[in-house]
Length: 478
Picture: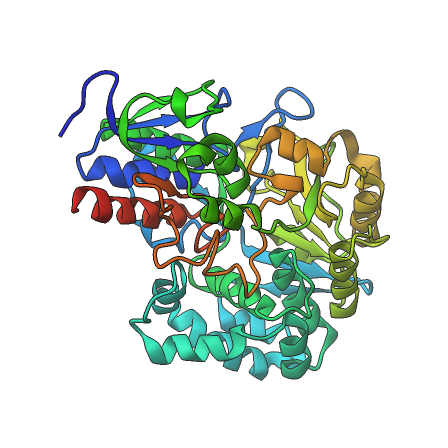
């Protein structure tokens, strides 16, 4: 059924990958959809801009996309037809050490294991079966809590995933290289590495690297959002930018509303439509640490001591398991580490569209206490210089975005939390609250489709996919 000019079957508030993904699912089902975006451009966490100098294209939030090809939903969309080209660096990830060496996460499990010396066989045993069964594991764990379709494979994953990253790394590996590599990936969780299920973050991301790669989008992460938006329009969906929403009463008439927003914004916009008990539960939703992010315009490529770091688009800085665990624990307890764990992306060596000829870009952030306005640029740059002497001499310009500025840029980043809320054992499958269908609110026709729902953060659009599917079943019988 196609509604009139001012009426829609569905309205989606927010145009991140999840909002656009939800709209695509609804449009494919023949529903009229309008996406409303407060900013001038669509994209949420997948935007790009010239943050430093003209001609230098920087990713404002997400830069590398471990989930893009692993997402069952995104894989089925014809995004290449809408201009999206994903670039695979020779190696997904490098992790340098103070002695000038580096551990490297390669596309193949075997090649990765070969670089880990005494821990080669341990790595093969841990990651080989998961990489081989990646599609089955993703199908069972990448979404709301439900009975697994592949119980044996998922049980094997769970035996390792339901542990702390520090505990699993210490038990499985002997060498600093293997332990450090494990810790750097696990720290994407933005939780202390002693917390239960932080091993899961490492296993999923490494599994994605081996099975699908960690690509970047040619021309910037904005191209992901642009491709999703183009596909949605081709399906008949509409998008309105520069259209902030402060109250649900402002929306055009529609059958349902899906919020690509976190609980705090949902409460602000729709509190008068939600039962008091549910409002209290949303108000108790917990957000995690924030980030302080830097982008650099550089006069040349980063001069890594370990040559293998030049083959990877993603580099984790923090060396040992102990150092990374200490850094993440300090942040969790409200402190700013002197040597922060740093996630760095270098896109321009693999994508010449990112900078003028002969010049380069780089992107990095570290974790900070929630809402911290502290500028961590000196400490972040010290970490880069530690592993790439001469880096500072290459800096032409920099952009610094503190945690409060992150939230000002995107209200979903509460306190600078780019994951849409803590993803610990209490909020993994029960985000934003414990409900049989976590995407549905108790109010008829209102749904949440953001990263504050399962499976959580990442540019995979699966939260939007599952929310829209739930809405179709409950509201339209589809």
